Image (cartoon, rainbow, N blue to C red):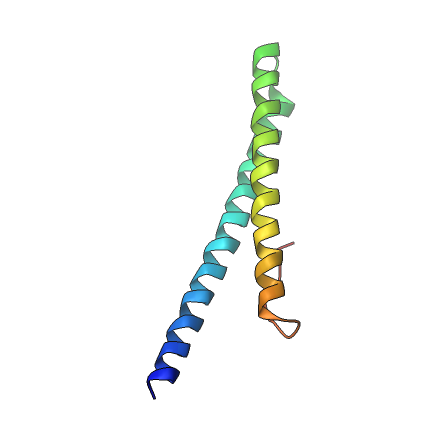
Length: 86
């Protein structure tokens, strides 16, 4: 029976990691939306430049989390219920 408990714990841990990853994707997507809005409303050249840097950084972060999610999905196999947010 110890093997079943270990397996159950590992599944719970994987599910928690998956939820944390999805939350990171959601949060980064929201921050990107705000940064784009700030860019659209920026008037001063320095603010426009700062917004561009912020957007680029957030896009890189989002790409990282998305890559992690895809790798996790691949590890779980084709029958996974894991779906990327739209």
